[in-house]
Amino acid sequence: MYLSKIAIPWGKSQNAYNWHDCLWQLFPHQPDAKRDFLFRVEHTAVGQGSQILMQSQREPNPIAVGAKLLAKRDYPLTLKSGQVLRFILVANPVKTMKDQEDPPRKNKKGEVKTCRVPLFKEEQQREWLERKLLGAARLESITVQPNLPLYFRKKDHPPGKIVPVTFEGVLIVDQSIQLEALIINGIGPAKGFGCGLLSVARFR
Image 1 (tube, helix red, strand yellow):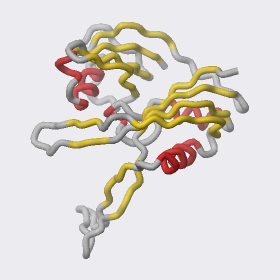
Image 2 (image 1 turned 180 degrees about the vertical axis):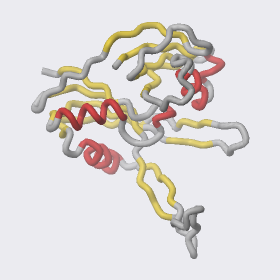
Image 3 (image 1 turned 180 degrees about the horizontal axis):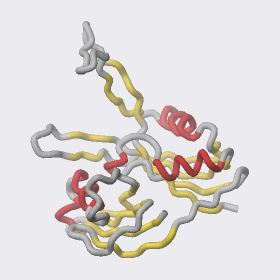
């Protein structure tokens, strides 16, 4: 895998839908490929743009329109059970609820419609992350920092919103293969809006 630092200009930084489109341009000539990258917005400066940390399974192309590759390095995963790691994760903790109408609305398959509801209480957010890590790692310490709501818009669609949370702390690896899968595939929904990238580093 690769870790890359990306710059996106201010004109493309004001709508979260544009982040994903700009990053896709770093992987040209593969129109049928599935998204195999995760990212996190590290900093945004008004009038200047955003700096993004991207993790990808393919090597990004330095030539792109709308995204500038600032730095890149190999990112091998060499985790071991029992290892103690620092971590940071920007995620979108939610619960899925069935439609509350009477009778409930159904989708084209005849199934009751569901929707994702943000978890706002810190205890619920911690429990959500513990469930996601179950079997892969356990939390030794954690802080939870609420982020500002993220608004986005797409042509011909009503505006949307997610409520990201930043988790930071220390974890202990239980099953290295399972934790590596979480790092590669990401945690939780809204990955196209900069959520789900679990970054780890040696603690001791």
